[in-house]
Length: 308
Ligand code: NAP
Image (tube, rainbow, N blue to C red; front, side, top):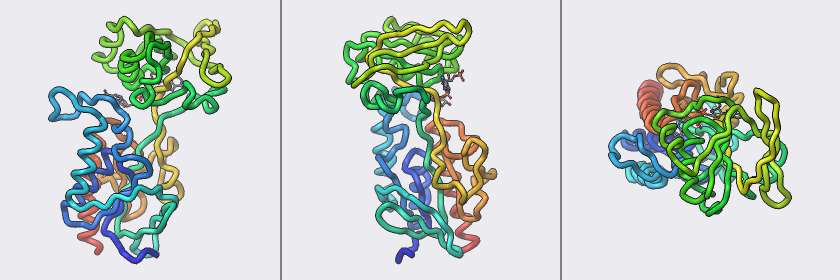
């Protein structure tokens, strides 16, 4: 068991986790936060955020991520850039074992977020980073003057598709239905963009290429007609799956793998709370992730007041 016992451990450094840590630190609770990659979670790889209140003109995703991290650290959060591999309870103390060490705390906030869903077609894994991407902000610049395909019909597909037109000569959005799920403002912008075209009622059956993506095989789900489209890249934006592997067997998950909580964001294990996209019923917006982080932190304060 670790020598030091923190009041709170937060697992995940996205909007939910960083806000939770800010609140618990500012409430004078010793707080440790684990992040396996870079702080900010999905927001760190989002180009531009237009709907976070207070930023009239919008703000870079990376900027807001850095500021949230700095704000939590300013009030005392200790950030550990390690991946937590196992979580357990010993009496009233929780233990997290990372790739490097073990850590202990009296309460836990699970805020591991969600990861991009894969299509699951041949060559998708093999050509990842060789033309297959899940992040326009990260990889868009590699496609200057090239042709790319974006898969999906939600806000991500349209927002990222529009971003890709800064570099790519043509962005073809392939959607499995003939109606977009994305918000009207993004639909309007995408349809007005002369570099964007749509292929409706269509799914990707296969990605082709030896050393890099060269083409995709598409199938119309209504007619069954197949076509091969040459492309330099394929960007996949078909939703997210919760990063709840660590919580499996420790707290109750639903059939989709999301952590089940009550109205105060408490999980099935007393002293363990969850916030953000890893949680069942999360709205999947930065502002709501931050709101849940705050609510979980307040619930932790009440729990520690009562039990410690
Ligand atoms: P999403 O809203 O779940 O949309 C996923 C899209 O992918 C849907 O159009 C879906 O088709 C399609 N899809 C799902 N599985 C598929 C498969 N196996 N093959 C082909 N297509 C598939 O996901 P998202 O766009 O990542 O957005 C997630 C959340 O983040 C949403 O709440 C969204 O509002 C939010 N978000 C907001 C902003 C913003 O406010 N600017 C930006 C990005 C994301 P169907 O439509 O047929 O289901």
